Amino acid sequence: MFKFSHIVTLFLLLITPHFALADDEQPFNRVNLQASAIGHVDNDTLQAMLIVQESGSDPAHLAELVNRKMTTVLEKANKFKDVDKQTTNYTTRPMYKKNVIHSWQVMQTIKLSSMNFEQLGQLLKQLKPLANIQSMHFTVSDAVLEATQDKLTIHAIGKFRSKSAMIAKEFGKSSYTLVQVSIGNNYRPPRPMMERGAMVSDMQMKSTAPALSAGTNKVTVNINGTIELL
Image 1 (cartoon, rainbow, N blue to C red):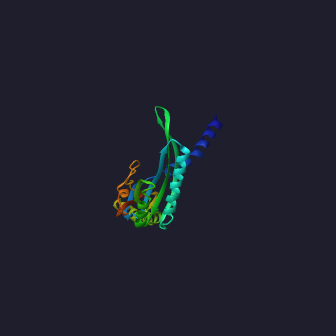
Image 2: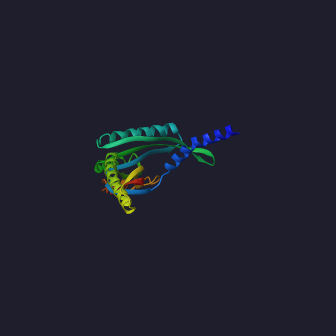
Image 3: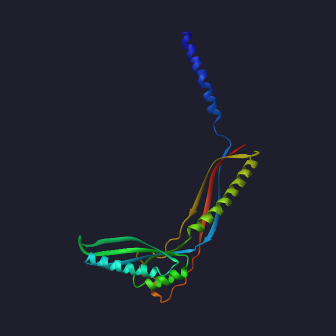
């Protein structure tokens, strides 16, 4: 009996320091806070999505027509050095009437983008007999967006540090330490000016290239973190 009690006592002595250490490691004096920096940046890129489309009864012939038109579109686009181009979806689909195929539709899209709005406007004017504008919108180039986010991140970090120091002071603490932090960017490109299905635009009806206004976009950097008051 004595031997059993001795073993139990020894076991309790061994595990007691572990519990004490666990209690010491419990967090306290921790505060969650957020800081944000917001900026507006000029849109410097115009993107347009165009579609070449043919409908009829012979899918092979329709594909030939679409390929021929897209080749001409690319030839014209290649003459504008400031315009980037990328062909995208190519689709052949049957059109049904009373559960029976009555025709076919073949289409291919091309994405055009440029920081030279005048050049892209002139190109769109030339392409109107060949392709319809599916959508168009202004956006911010990757380089400008990244540079803007870097500046806002620095500003947001400064606000986070100032707020942390203020909180520590108001709670009567001499300083703080950073426990964890996360940084997130918020940028939403604008919606296209023309949605799918609005295949004929005012731009296509004009004989001259349109005047375009790019506008601005809001960029936000959020910092969420936890500090421990010392």
